[in-house]
Image (cartoon, rainbow, N blue to C red):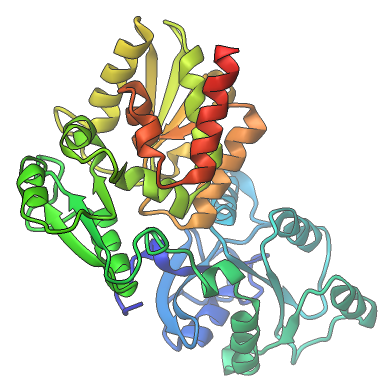
Amino acid sequence: MYRGSPKSFRLHIGIFGRRNVGKSSLLNAVTRQNVSIVSDSAGTTTDPVEKPMELLPLGPVLFIDTAGIDDVGSLGELRIQKTQQVFDRTDIAIVVVESGVWGEFEDKLVENFRQRNIPIIVVFNKSDLGQPNESLQQQLKKDKIPFVFTVASRGEGIDELKKIIISSAPEEFINSPTIMGDLVGPGELAILVVPIDKEAPKGRLIMPQVQSIRDLLDNDALCMVVKERELRYALSILTKPPKIIVTDSQAFLKVVADAPPDVWVTSFSILFSRFRGDLITQVEGTLAIENLKPGDRILIAESCTHHPIADDIGRVKIPRWLTQYVGGKLEFDTVQGNDFYTGVDLKNYKLVIHCGACTLNRRAMLSRIMYCKQAGVPISNYGLTIAYSLGILERALQPFPSALDVYRQSKNLKKV
């Protein structure tokens, strides 16, 4: 990873605790910069403060300093909501306490993270002023929760904390999955179909396309990038067919029509369903399209905020394709960014359709999938929904045998 790695590729390390326990001082000490404002007044930190850095040998990480979980008043409640949103994208949780203080707030934090299977590190800060009781230390050891004593304002204990962070990193981060490196071996060719339309940033490619190119290079694969109308010509000049063709979902029909029948075809969005989330669960969610009826409500969820264009994929194209498939008018709502967590009752929807989540880390996307499961609402994503509504999902799932089996079993059950 390079220094400018996107946030979605970084290990997210959240710093949590009560007000005025030294969370911001800890962040400043770890990063060796004055990232967060430090004050003796409780509640100095309001919105979460993010600081990307390199933490070797892990590589790119993102520290997130949060507001006190014990904040009070109406404004305090809003700050706590912002802090709780960070739970969903935290890969490692640092719970900061004053050395002699442990109570209900800390118990709730630890239990929350344990339920989510998030590694926890307890930092007893201001350890020069007091020590935790022996029974608490023994309980943490019993629960296999590492802890460290620090005086963040003087930098004491910070090196030990960094060592524990490195040893606590989740296995999936150390040996992170690839976008398609396991599908395209060394020396094999992938053709990426990249339409240059109004949604393509001027002078740049969108994030999933850039990340896919880098992933192929990291895995010693070959990569050819073409626009959709150049695919047929590109295939004609090759002496050997590509292993896979990956397209923007909006060009699915044309690409499938031009691609040889024995070559895999899928979309960037479907690749990212596997890379960022849970492809099997989202394929199962996609099958719920078959049961949609006119008048049903559908939630379109976008991980980033962008200004929609006239023919926006989430607001225009997907609603159009689904309406045509269902044969009647459907009701669509759209949320962006963290609006997914506020003012949305998932139980009001028959289906959630999420974008590829290229700007989220995997923990955040899995959290959103978990919320949908808890609400009993199926969740799909852009590429899967488009492929299903166009009748080409089976072709688009050929690179993924387990997901393809789920689709085929569903179709066979319906035939019976």
